[in-house]
Each structure stands twice: as structure tokens, then as C-alpha cells.
Length: 179
Image 1 (cartoon, rainbow, N blue to C red):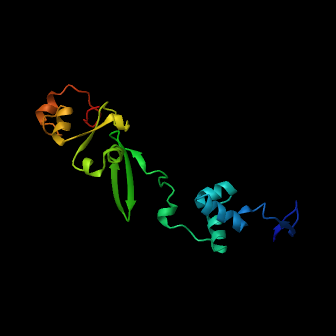
Image 2 (image 1 turned 135 degrees about the vertical axis):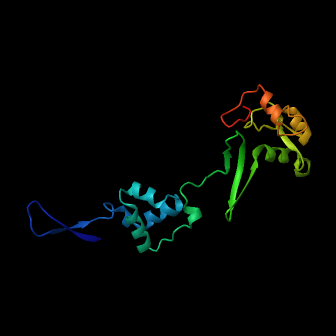
Image 3 (image 1 turned 45 degrees about the vertical axis):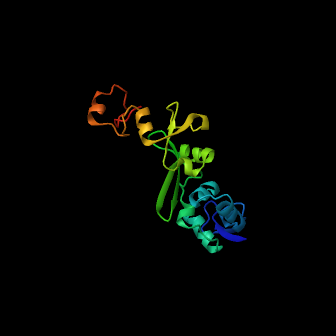
């Protein structure tokens, strides 16, 4: 138990009173460990929860030899789920390993699960209803590059020619992509 000075009204010399751990919960080693390691809170989140400052939490964790997570584990903005929407409307699964980010469309993973890797390897996966986030197996089909381009009205190439781009009456978003 810690004894801290307390001043009474108009007193020049401090009186001492006992301060309990419940008044200063950041001094509770097991609580800090549980919040940091088991609940995976950041030191900022712990400070907010315990009504103290982040340096106070850090100081007491150091005093109790509570190990810190590495930068990757402690990143407050890390995704708990690897699937994210792209700005083009697709759902992808992204991973970052040793600074290299790789991603794959969920629609491709669904088709690999349905048809096998070899069947999907050199094919494009097309959304039949045009809804890029609708990855139900019945909405997906495998097409060759040429078939996929023709399905989208680009002739035999996925990227339209400048003339096709200019004469197309399809609505586009602010970046010039078809909606």
C-alpha cells in the first residue's frame, strides 16, 4: 500500500493517508496484464479505461516487467479481418508479410473452392449480375480473357480503345470507370 501526502484546508504540513489500489488501478499488475495481453487494448485505451495518462500506464507496465507487443501486434489500426472493399467495389483478402502486401479477390477464392485451383488459374471470374461484392457461387462464372472482355463490351481486349471509351454512353464515376 502506498502512503501519499494529503493537505487539509489551510494546513501548511501534509497529513498522510493510505491510498488503495482501487483508487489507482494502474498499479494493479494483474489488471494491466489482462487489459494489455488478454483484452489486447493499447496503452492509450488502457489509460482511458483507468482514467490516467498513457505514460502512467507505460511506466507501471515497465515497473511490473509486463512485456510489450511488437509494432505489428500493437498497431491500433490493424484489421481484425483480412477482407476489405476496394474502391472499385470488389471484396479482397489482403495480407502483409514482412512488408509485402498480397491480395486476392474473394470471388477468385470462391471459384477456387468450387472448381479447384487448376480450373481458375488462367481464367477471369465474372459476376453475372454485375454486382462486384456479390460473391455467391451461383453469381460467378469462369471466362477466358477474350470472353470476359466481350461480355463487358470491349471487343477482345479488357481495356477499351480510346474511341470505344469516347463513344460509350455508359455512366462513369468520377475516375472515369464504368458504374
